[in-house]
Length: 63
Image (tube, rainbow, N blue to C red):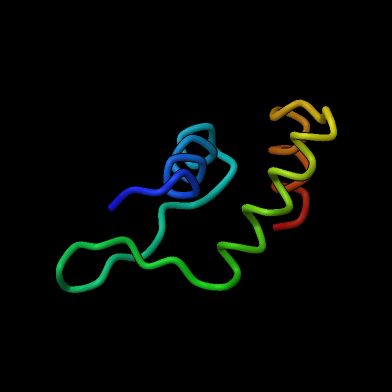
């Protein structure tokens, strides 16, 4: 079952904001607590009006 969070994660992943999640032996995506935290941070910044390009820059500076 695909939830709205799954779709949002995929959109941000496709835009280079989040990494491809690990997969289990069955091929299902495995999201961890850090993935949820990263998603919340990105969504909060995006909802505050920060452009996705700037968020991407902030995230790459962190790594």
